[in-house]
Image (cartoon, rainbow, N blue to C red):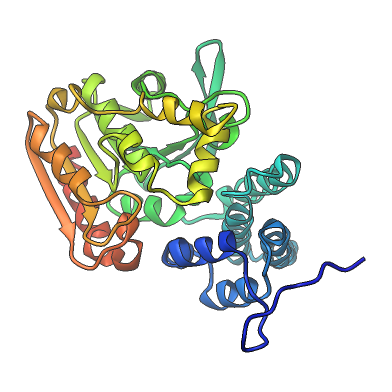
Length: 366
């Protein structure tokens, strides 16, 4: 039996609120992270109900995956890697907030991991999957190194609430082009770890495990480790820098100062994703979990150089969060509030992306 679709006054299919929210809040992020604009327009135009979201994006991802397999079979390795990366990002944005249907989300997530693994050896800066010991288990990461002989400086990269290590291709490439290695990882409540490990406010525990791993590798320079984080990962990076003194420099992009202060004003998709990924039974319990994510009394311990970025028009993490972090750190600080910028300034990445990478490269001495 077909589901009847609601129509608006103009006779067009009416989208439900969650679909509208995803399109309104994250369109710039999709495109700037590698989703072709036409793909975004065509896929979202065909979705009216949130239940259709993951399947629609997975279908478009499968098209890119097939192009990658054909290119690889023909010996066109560079083209194959590019196709697999597009498949990865489309599968990712199919699963990123789809927490109400865990089996469907997990199926898409498996394809995210598979396609990124297919792409990694084919890239101009190849990568490898790594697993880092963590409290009797492990955290999964992607390590990529610049050209030339090591040991290389490395930027440890913390993803956000609805991101995974596989989303960071564009950010990684900018650091790699400047002679910096990258180690993107899924921490507790994120990516591969989201099903078994809940979000934790004391994220410095995860950062320490990753830094321990870096220091044990001869091809990475333990004296030149940077820390980077985006959205909720901007909080994680700042929190890690406050406790892990082996960090030489930190970049925090649209990170909240206190998660609970932004919690009630966030959209339904974000709050539900946090509830599921913090393993809370209901929204009241999720709000209690949110209270544990705070830099109060902690930001003052950030003594390494830090670059804090906020968007003037950011509705998810308003710019006063960046301003408060910057005001409380004890070490050198660069603060940039981008005029007209939305969340993570995805609509104006050219205003901070290369600038922060240059800053990190100067400090780490690439």
